[in-house]
Image (tube, rainbow, N blue to C red; front, side, top):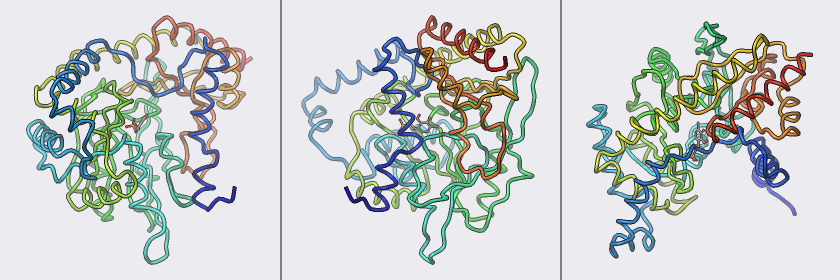
Length: 416
Ligand SMILES: Cc1ncc(COP(=O)(O)O)c(C=O)c1O
């Protein structure tokens, strides 16, 4: 097979595809594998009941059913959903939005592919722009999305040591140097993999830097506000004309419907929708149909505040306590869990790399994500990047408890 440059890059083994394959085949090889690696949300019966109720109401109505299955929407997405969401965001946060500020994607992952390549890569004058990650580690799913090489640059964070074996990353503004060729800043808030939530001050400062440069700030709210609101600290949601806020229905419990949402100024939305038309023609209708009903009825707020947020907070607390007990006096730290649904563990001076730890754990039936994948874009060598792992705690509690015990045992062996 003779592949193009595009084909070689995108059909080859990328970090994320390799890891996802490994996660998938590991389960085939060992059905008893404890899955603490993937990004699936937890199962919440109350959420499932609401999704089902709204879907059944749509299916029972022949016109609505037809528009769900039998129609393409425009490349920007379902008009009714976009207006409903615009008025919801306007009422809740005072953002000056209309449906022309909102577009839909087939999952936010595909929105990132389009957006990141819209602002970085080869420029009309032949130069190359990159996307800057003001705080690394960042979401592994961005890593291979660039159409050109050296697509990301990143700033190493400042580490604040906290009580209770916790730590927190902060944007190190003293190191944040944007070369002349930065096309956009990009951050997830809460951050996958660490569960960090950028402070309001950090977001305001990044917003200011982006404006001064005339580049957008891309804010990934896949776990954040207003939904699914997997946040355990107070933080102000952020959007303005220079911000591209990307949301998703996945972590609310609907990863299978593949619905992402882009909120941006009109010029960016219309550029995005044009590109989305080429890549996808149109987006799926099921996610927007369910979500429109949730917004219209106002159920979205109670669903998140009464069920989603407490479920993950409870799990984060239990997983943190289990690790504290199991790791005892080992030199470990846990990133303060402020949101999302992972614990990010740091084993300072670990004699083996996080990749080796991942492989040893896989042999013992536990899957985690080795942290080094999440430091893409960082040019300098930093031992810290091989000392961290990401652990998801959304599996059933008994499995998580077993997984924690095995991880602790393997880490103890590694320290010798
Ligand atoms: C931070 C972050 N952004 C975006 C995505 C993409 O999610 P989706 O394509 O399901 O909307 C994920 C998925 O895990 C994520 O963790």
